[in-house]
Image 1: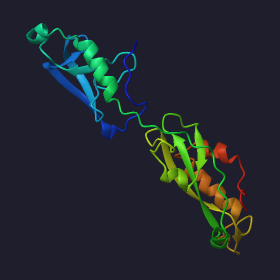
Image 2 (image 1 turned 90 degrees about the horizontal axis):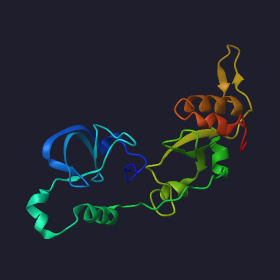
Image 3 (image 1 turned 45 degrees about the vertical axis):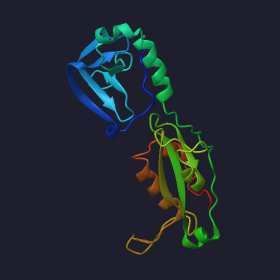
Image 4 (image 1 turned 45 degrees about the horizontal axis):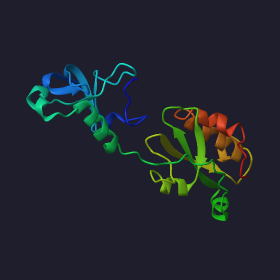
Length: 207
């Protein structure tokens, strides 16, 4: 069975890559001393290879001179596995249900509302609409896991003319609902490609 990390995703700041040991520092769970490249995580995990390679990287534990402690009669491999299970910190979280947030009277007076979204970090096709409560509950048992989801917002026009109103020179005199939201989605879709499919040309929603 391949060794697995505690989390599905880590930021670059949580990983130290390209480390090297000449021995006396790390060993495999079975007690074999390890020499070579390795990398570490802020969670305390250590794996072989300069960066994680699924199916190749192996778990490393702090080196112990087993010959000097063999008389203790301890199975260090089993002992480590038990301790490791106890130490894993699993953050309970839930996947938020898609929300349809309605604009307030104030939003309609201002001409726009703020829409919030969450995109799965390891799958750009997974995008859901959320609300302020989801943001507040992030990383709680009832909220989304920010290691798995990246949140963002956009300004959505909800009132005004349907299309841009132009002056005699062709300049925009008053921004229209459809044209403004098209521009907004085109810009945001450069970073969040699934957004365009989610909106599905419904640029007058909430208007």
